[in-house]
Image 1 (cartoon, rainbow, N blue to C red):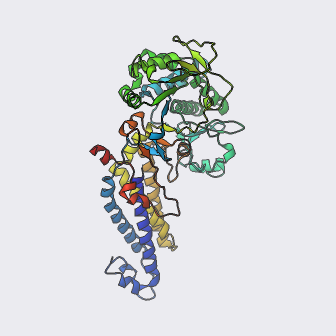
Image 2 (cartoon, helix red, strand yellow; image 1 turned 180 degrees about the horizontal axis):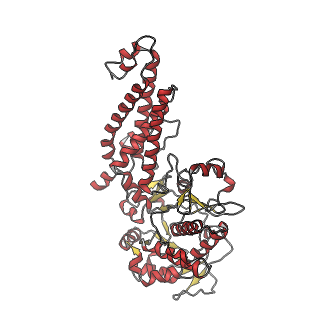
Image 3 (tube, rainbow, N blue to C red; image 1 turned 180 degrees about the vertical axis):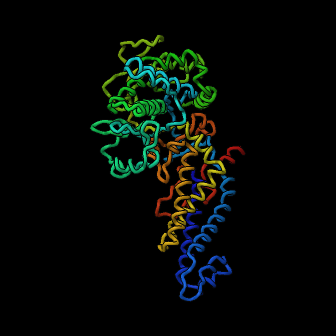
Length: 522
């Protein structure tokens, strides 16, 4: 992620430096401009007859073209250092040699689902709204759009709007949707008295809305159908001028999505056609075999029921899958699993029936239900499937060209804003328009409505803030572990602060991010 950004930052710094030199030349008059002629020849336009003003429009556009040429020269070097989509990225220093026990979630960790699953969840929840909550049958015309929402979005329950918020609680304008339509920036600013959402309105760090919080954050991959269904039903009511209470709509959709899980609708559908819904089982088998061969202990913790997990793991690993795990815990009710001491473990038999035996210790090969308090300094790794597709987009020449020039143009704007005359301001307005168009194009590269999962225009998203806090390492899939030795140490790169030199650490080959070319060479 850092290579293109680092080069772009360097280009922006160069643009700022060039801008500063040009401003100094302007202020020192024709003698300075003439002296610099042999170096660049670009200051000649400032030499005018005594008593006449310099041609600022020509001068600024020359600086613009000079910066664009410099940026174009950077692109080939960036293209030779593309990021590896199968790499593991670290937020904290962590050595796998220190890890003796590996714990896994089931959904989207050990098992990766096909695109059909979200369509199934959306359709089933939509039908529950119609059949059990008496919503208009006409909402059945709405179908699941996998390209509408991204994870990490916030939903204002009382105002019925979906939006993207950065790590500092600022709304990214242009990403606020009521129903399926974008809300104009002016209306958003009026609604929230600016673009900042106060802390007291945000959900807690687990995404729950309580104590008057009106913002619900959707972090889970399973929440994608929920966001889309919310938006579709909102759209239907708005288009048909139906008066409704947004809080009730949110609760009904939430309950319908929950019932798709708790009533077993999703589980039965997957079990009935497991090859349709489960992808890449061979990758999970390879990772588990590698860890077992190196003597690592493993456990599985999932909110899913015993019979469902058993059928999926038999498909992925084989009928002896439990031999790989020292402990298996089902229906764990995470995240409460990690901090609720009140519920003891219960053993589950082969038929999925809960037994009443008192549990004194956890035995290998057995399945258990309920909670365990985990306060033992666990290191955490996050599986972010969207990471692979975003990295592939970031590796394209179009994206690299756009981002590099965007950063350079931003640096140019920062330096040239000192020219306050009307002619200069017209040029700067053109640059700002171009910058805005490039930002919109960059956003659309990832998702037309909401952009990247990890960034707003310039800041990390609230999703990335939480990821950075809770995950020591993160990767696109469990199979990324296959590229690393079990003693590998992950070192986070030093991220430059705003007051530090741009990306100085990335200039050294020893501190570069994981590159695609190096992985292919191996």
